[in-house]
Image (cartoon, rainbow, N blue to C red):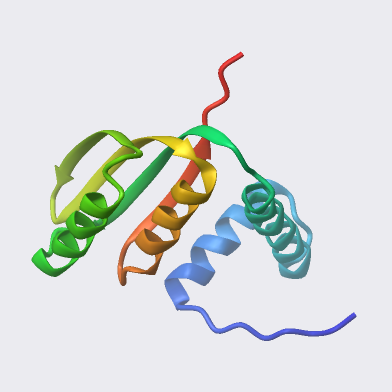
Length: 130
């Protein structure tokens, strides 16, 4: 099995260790392998989607004009799939929830562009209506 090395902050390591201990993993390696599998499954799931979809994208980012301008420009470019945007400002952070409807390829393009913006954390979820 190959060995990989990873550098993280002391704070992140402490948080990881706390969660690892509570979750019952016997080693850092076991917890990291589980995290890697979860990461791969989450991203592979979206690589295979196609067709017309209903999805949400969540954003958290520092309240800075440069970031807001970049996001606003993307919203303008992808306005045809954006059905609503709800946002909150908490302290120096902005939190946004986007409801997107359209072809998955276009939704994925918007998501990838948002994820490229420095200091923006984002996640995407499919909404399944039975």
